[in-house]
Length: 158
Image (cartoon, rainbow, N blue to C red; front, side, top):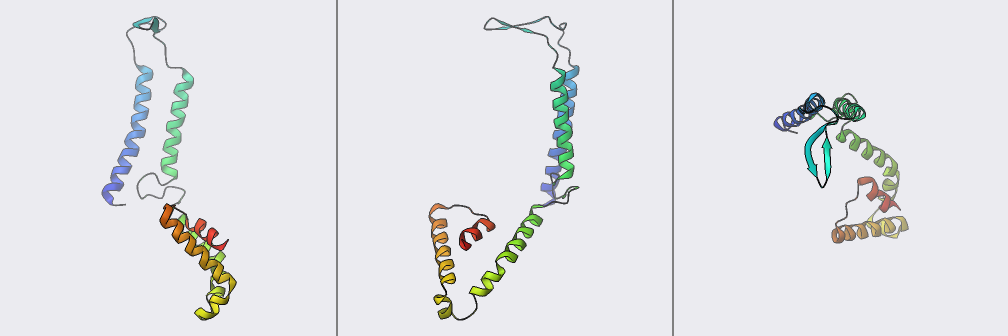
């Protein structure tokens, strides 16, 4: 992510969170000019609006959500390229999954790719894998389905 995009993301996240706090605080202190419980002089379909305070449980629920959002923004990578306090990144997770998958299937691939093309063509495991790869390639081209690296290898390996 470029520096400009990173600054934009950080600004939007922080301004939004601060804006939510100001909005919640402001609306809880807002005066309607009418005493609590009295009519607001609005009527829709015979229903009269009364001046009622925001229920306290709503206020505390909104406040809890804002606090959770602030914690989330600092714990996970929600502030641009900052990995957050958890240190989690999408790239790191991807690399770990590829490493696990390579460890899982490296023995199989090294076993079936030894020898000449003629020898591999006689090996039923190689032929089965080749057929599955061909079918996946055709199926992917026709239906444009998206498979993750692990899903693709699971289908190929059976």
